Amino acid sequence: MQPTPPTTARRRRRAAAVAGSAAASLLLGSVAAAAPGSPGVGADDLGRQVISPGADGWASVTTTTYPEGVAREATPVTGGADAAPEHVYVVDTWDELRDALGGKAGADHNDGRHTTVPRIVYVTGHVDAFEGQDCQAFADQVTVEGTGEPFSMDDYVAHYDPAGDWGWNDPSGPLEDARRAAATVQSYQTQVHVGSNVTIVGVGDDAQISGANLRIRDSHNVILRNLTISDARDCFPEWDPGDGGSGNWNSAYDNVSVWTSTSVWVDHNTFDDGEHPAESLPTVYGRPFEIHDGLLDITHGSDLVTVSYNRFEAHDKTMLIGSSDGRLQDRGQHRVTLHHNHWQDIGQRAPRVRFGDVHVYNNHYEQSEPGLFQYYWGAGRESSIVAENNAVDLAAGVDPGRIIGVYGGTMLSESGTFVNRRLTDVVGAYNATASVPLADEARWTPSDHYSYRLLPTQAVPGVVGAKAGAGKLASVLP
Image 1 (cartoon, rainbow, N blue to C red):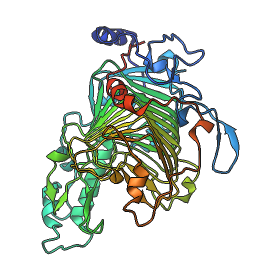
Image 2 (cartoon, rainbow, N blue to C red; image 1 turned 60 degrees about the vertical axis):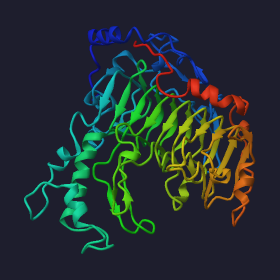
Image 3 (cartoon, rainbow, N blue to C red; image 1 turned 90 degrees about the vertical axis):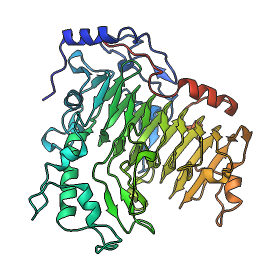
Image 4 (tube, one colour; image 1 turned 60 degrees about the horizontal axis):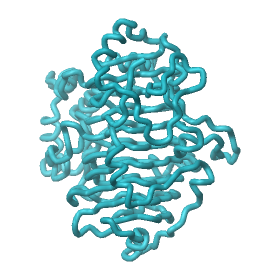
C-alpha cells in the first residue's frame, strides 16, 4: 500500500512559502530536462530531470558488460521522473519522508527497499531524523539486565575501560547486550530505506536532512539532488579493542549508504557532520569517540554510479567504494564516476576503492591544515582508478606523495594533477618512497563507455567553487 501524498491545497501552501527562492533551475552538469511522457513536466522542475544518456559518467551508460561477461542494454538514471501525480510528495518532517519512501527501515513488512513505483519526493526546510530526541531518549527505552536501570553510555565506558579490570577483551555481558539493544532502538528511528525509481530533491537553498542514515539498498534507478545531508551520528558506537594497535570506536551509520544497488546519481548535495564535527568529539580510551562512519559509501557490489558537483566537508572516512577484500563477487562492479566535487578538510577515502573501475576527474581537494589528513585516493584490491585534471591544495609541508594510499592495489592512472597550483606527477611522488611501486596505468578507458569534457585543471577550483554543493540548483514545486 502506498502512502497518501499531501493534498493539493497543502502543496500549494508550501509552494507559496518557497516561491520567492524557487526560480527556474540552473542546469549544471549533464542533465536532460525530463523523462519522455512525464505528466506536467517543466524544464525547471528538478524532480523531473534525468541524467543525460551517455554523457555523465557510469550512471549514464546505455550499454555495459556485466561481471559474467555479457553485454546488456543499460538504462541511464531517470529516478522518479515518470511518477504519476499521486506519487509526488512534498515533505518537511521525518515521518512524512519515511512514509513517502515506503516505511521505516527496521519494519520488514513495510520496507522501502521493496517499493518500486516511480516516486518524486520534494524536501522543504529541515527534516530531523531525531525529531527533537537525544541519544539518552533512545537509551532510556532499554533496561540493563539484572539492574533494572536504563542503559547509559557513561556506564558502558566506565565498565569496559581497558585501563581497568576489563582490560583489552571484547565487550560482552549485560551492558554490551544493552548497547546493542539501544542501537536497534535508534535504527528504527533514524534509518530509512530508499527503494527503486525514486528522485529525492531539495527545494530552495535550505533543504536539509540531518541525523539520518539514508540507505539505498537493493535498489535501482535513484537520484539525490540539492540536499544538505548531515550528521548521521551513532549514539552507541562499538568499542573494538582489537581494531588496530590501540583499538577503535566504530560507528554504524553513513549519511548515505549505497548498498547492492545500481544506477544511482548523487548530484549537487552537501555532506557534513552538522552540529557534531570531528573536533567537537571527545577522546575515550585514548581514541577518538567516533560517532560517524562514511559520508557517502558505495559498497556490496553497487554499480553504475555518478557522483557530481557535491561538497564533502570536514569528515574523516569520507567515501568507501567496495566493502571488503573478501567479496570476490564484487569483481566487475563498483563502477563509479566522481566529477566536479569539492573535498574540504577531509581525512581519507576520497575515494578508497576495491575492485571498481572508478573515474575521478575535475575535482578540487582542499586542506586548510593537515588535521585529519591521511590520503585522498586509496588503491585497494583489484581497483583501477583513472584520475584526470584534479586540483589539490595541500597544507604547508604535506608531501604530494601522500595524496595516494595503497591498500592492495597495483595501479592508478593519474594525469593533469595540479598540487598547490603546480603540475605534479603524483604517482611518481608516491613511488619515490614506496617499497612496492604503483603502476601509472588502468585496465579501462572512460571514453570507451561515456563521453565527457575535461576542464583544464587551472579552471577547476573556480568552477567547482561556484557550482558544487546544495543550494546551487534552484527548484520549483509541481
